[in-house]
Image: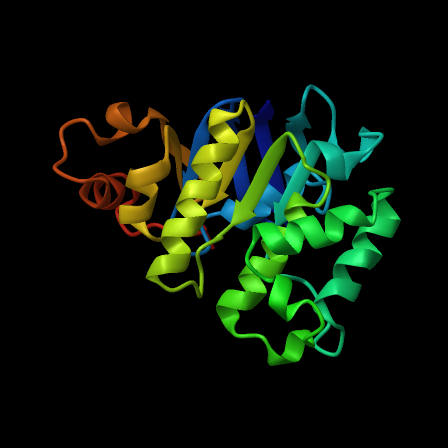
Length: 236
């Protein structure tokens, strides 16, 4: 269970997150939607202990991320691509993460195989395409065989085949009882994979519920999204 409980974050006089409240549950794919600058990345960073909160809570299985004893086995995350240095080889990047997280070395090759990068294991990250970088980031998220996946724009840079593959991977994870929380700008992909939605605009949650509940009265998710957000991004 991933829980945002009246999460509030400020930067100076500006409120970036204003009492954000929703949850991502096991066995479900939850999509976190909003315009650029609406607060999605800030909320995810707070959940993962990278940013502080001014009020409210962001919890993983009832505890702050920083208090998890083996965080990589509980939550696998991908923010801003792979996070790997361009000069590092893909396998070495994952070995470093595995060593730091107390994860067996065998998981490195298993994760590379799982994301389709086994043949590129010894390539330097600087030689990767954008899509390959996304796959490497996902491999890092999968290393600990975590209960939950938190992914920011996971299909960015993937070709149609890669997007279809990603959709299947996320659906499979949820169907096995895992939790998936993802942000995306691709409404058609979200509509194909998401069970639940949380929509944020101007730092506030403007809709949450099942896909059917959020899109009720609108012909498509895209139409519902524009009606709910009305072009609002992060409040200045």
